[in-house]
Amino acid sequence: MLSDPSAALSVVFDKDGVLEEISSGKGYIDMSTVDADTSSKISEAITKKGGYFLEAPVSGSKKPAEDGQLVILAAGEKELYEEITPAFNVLGKKSFFLGEVGNGAKMKLVVNMIMGQLLKFSASPFLLTLSWLFLFYSMMNALSEGLCLADKSGLNPQTLLDVLLKGPAMIKGSYAPAFPLKHQQKDMRLALALGDEHAVSMPVAATANEAFKKARGLGLGDLDFSAVFEAVKGKGSSGDA
Image (cartoon, rainbow, N blue to C red; front, side, top):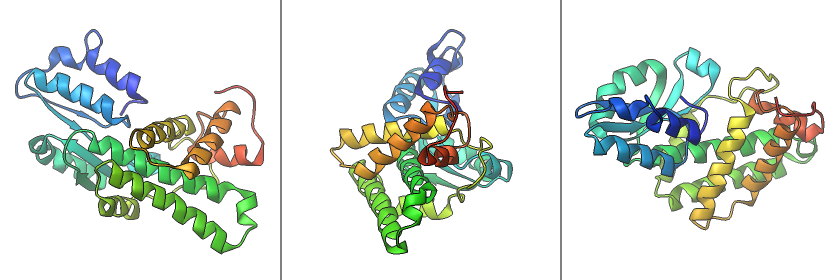
């Protein structure tokens, strides 16, 4: 699992990278959270050399990974997926095969976009003073944006609901970096770009992204993504860690 698209591309295309070792019959599985275009570039390069490619980003963070409770969102070469499923069953409690390359990346971005928005709402002292009905509406709006984006991106909305229901619960009140905030903000940015590509308006996601950007500006990027609470409160140190 690598941190971002540039790292994923570097590992494959740079000197002494994966591409130099790939040959007919060999497979490569990338479990990083990247955009669909990045996965497609890697897949094309691998398959041109006769290899097999599977993208397999995960929903979950440090504790679910330690407990084998990740949710794996795979797409690409079905034969490779079936071959690696026993290993996925050790890493996670559930894996999904989502079809063609790019669908795993899209699904992960949609999931993280929704989770990021829900965390932002739960972290806001202002929202928590409002009626539960308003908070419920805000959360439903976030889910609605995610379902719409999934559908427009060629994903099955029902599968998105299955992933969310089986996904790990968010850790609140602790900033030990199970999933770094800077990566959550990166995923929000990539999801917004996907929405722009498909002309899906996502004002709730855009607002949540601004909160995560503010948290990064406060130096909270290397803490857990729940540290967005500090940005909402207006606290934090200067400089990105």
